[in-house]
Every structure is written in C-alpha cells, then in structure tokens.
Length: 438
Ligand code: FE2
Image 1 (cartoon, rainbow, N blue to C red):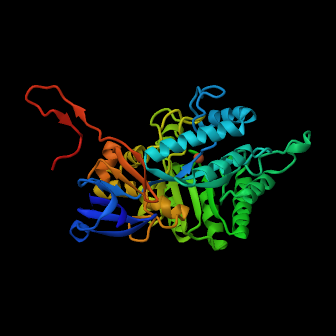
Image 2 (cartoon, helix red, strand yellow):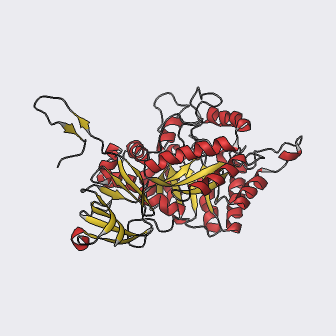
Image 3 (cartoon, rainbow, N blue to C red):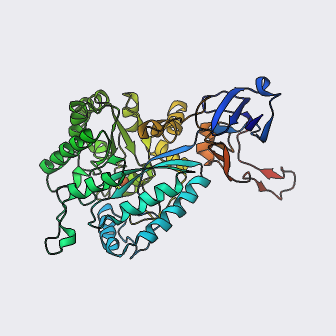
C-alpha cells in the first residue's frame, strides 16, 4: 500500500501515461500506468494526462522587502536607484514581526503557486541585523513546506557602507556584519560590486567575499553588474576568483545586465571564461526589462543578460523573480511561470528548445544552483511535485497554468480547481479551458 499515487501524468521530459507512487516522504516508483495499475494507495490523484513537474524553484528573491509596497511611500520614478533610496528610508522603521509576517504571507502565495524552494538575499547593511534574524525565523517556520536558502547581501556595498562612529551599537563594518549573519546561519555569501564607489573597490569586494566564502566552505551569489554600463565587468573578476579558489559549481552571478550592452568581441572572450570557471548565471526578466534602459530614450535597451548565448556555452542559467510588491517592483504574485514567460519573450527564445529551456530555468536549473538534495521526479527523490493544468512545459508557460495540486513530502499542501470559463453563445461549446486541442 502506497501513501499516494498520481495516475496518468505527463512529465516535463515528454513521457506520458506515467504513474508516480509515493511512500512516506519519497517517490517510491515511477512507471507507465500498466505497471502500477494494480497498486493501491491511501490517496489517488487522477492527472488525466496533465503535466506533473518537480516544484518551481526561485533562485533569486528578496524576502525581507516583499509585500512592503507603499511603505513608507511609492517609488515614483520606478528606478533601481529610487528603490534603493526608498529601502533606506524604510529600514529604520522595520520591525522583525512585520518582516516575518510579510515573508510568511509571501510563502503562502509561493506554495499555492507550486514554488517550494527560494533563495532569498537578506540585507546585512544594518547594525541590528533585523532582517537577518527575521528571515532565519521564517526559514525555521516554513521548513516543513518550503526550502528557504538565505544569502548575506550587503545592499549598501561591503566597502561603501560606513559604520556610524557616533553610536556605539553601530560600529561594526559591513564585513563584520556579513560574517555575523553567516555565524547566525545564513547560507550563502552575497555582494554588490557595481554599487561600490569605484571599479577598483568593486573588484576588491569580489576578491574578499569569494575568499571569505572559500574559507567557510560556502556558496557565493553576487548581484553582479546590474547596470547598463558596458564597462561594468565584475563578472570577469567573479569568474577569475571562482576558478582561483576552486569554487567551481558554487558561484553564481545574478543579473549580469551590463552584458546586454557590452562589446560583442569582449563577450566572445567573457562567456567561455564564465563557463570554464563553473559559474552559473541568474537573469531576472521581470525586473531587468523594467529597471534597465531607464537612461535611454529610443531605442531603449531590454537590459536582460545574454541568456541564449550563456545557455549555449553550457552556463547553468536560471530565471529569478527578484521582487514582488516592494520598493523596486509593484507587480508579481510568486508565479514562476510568469517569470519564465517574460524570460523567453525578452530573450526571443520562442523556438521549441528555447521555450523548454525556459521551463528548466525555473525548475531543474535553479535546483542545481541552490544545491537542493533529492530534487526531481525519480524514485528516491523527495515527493515534491506540482500538477499543472497543461499538457507540456510550453503550454504551462503559455497559460501560466493553474496549479491543480501541489505536493510537498508526499502531502497535498495546495489545490486549485481547473480554470474553465462557461460560455453563453449559440452554436458554440459551453466551456473554454484554453488548452491546445491537437
Ligand atoms: Fe536582487
């Protein structure tokens, strides 16, 4: 007797008519329906040919700021710099309880969307480390239903941040604050080299943060070159230190938007260096298309990094959500299919392979970047999955498909009724469900 069987599912790799059987918290068997037809389970879900996927993974988010839209005021220009200024205005008024409350509310949305693993940056440029303690508390509380991985993010620049000498409780440097965050249990070392005062300081910040990560055996994920300046080349330094310190497979460059504007000849050298260093990349299409190109009139740059070219070079590339209803972005709802949709459209990846790669960029690839154990649809993996009202990954992205069932460790944690619309038209069908009838 199994605990759960999902019958007649289609899988992201194209297999159809598959039954997935769960015992306890793990997938026990995954076979064509004929093999498991006689098996019994305490609960059965009829997938009816719909797509069963491993859960969505968001490799880049800011959970300390999420759902704070309008506090203390709205971002009028919509720019990255006004967003950073606004966050600075909000920080002194934050309370741990309010951060925890908003983060938990976002995690509720995430679970409903089948998003069961999130890497969130947490601002360490705060002598109280309020957001760090808040998100560590959230990480503990959501652990039964969501994997939350935290990145120590020196938002104000690890060298640019200035301790306040006038207040004895605020004398720690940015590096000391970041190390305290790691001591308390934050998982990954972050950075923001393009925000340091000079290119030289940016390079120095990359060196010292990579060395700090290597000494502690941690992963690295830096906001890197989130700029339209083609001369912002900190990704080159990040790849250099990743290779020098033997951190291959453990280092990520987030955003990399300057690459959109770089000289093509330089990029022809840069991308192989990124691949050689085993550095992965995260594009944040909703935010990049919104925040980049702001100084342009027309033509206006898209600003997203060179996604198909990085993928073609074998660089693991994920799409992240980055922001939902915060000082930088007033939209979003934890829907990684919306993220994938924007990603493939901004990157013009509307070929079949490109669209499938976009689905991987919000599932398998970010799971690898986070180093998630037991992720995937195979015997022995965690019984974490999402049943979508779509037949394949491309249809799922097109429809931002309804999450019919979300399963975490063998337990159904969210359900939604299929999206159908009733029509009242003479001579036409009574219902529309938006699926492609082949
Ligand atoms: Fe970010």
